[in-house]
Image (cartoon, rainbow, N blue to C red):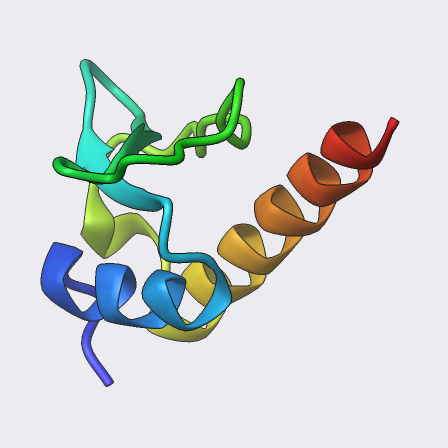
Length: 77
């Protein structure tokens, strides 16, 4: 599968419905989904990669998994 914002957000939605990935200036970050009435207090850490094409889809999903797992650990504290 190709690493596109649409594909990555579809993958992320399977992990948590609260966030989507958006492009920042030289990185990608997790942003609250518009219309979410119960967003968490804080989002997962950003993924510091300049372009989607710098990592294959499999590496993106690993980075998303790691960011979401770390966020869940922080949220549980």
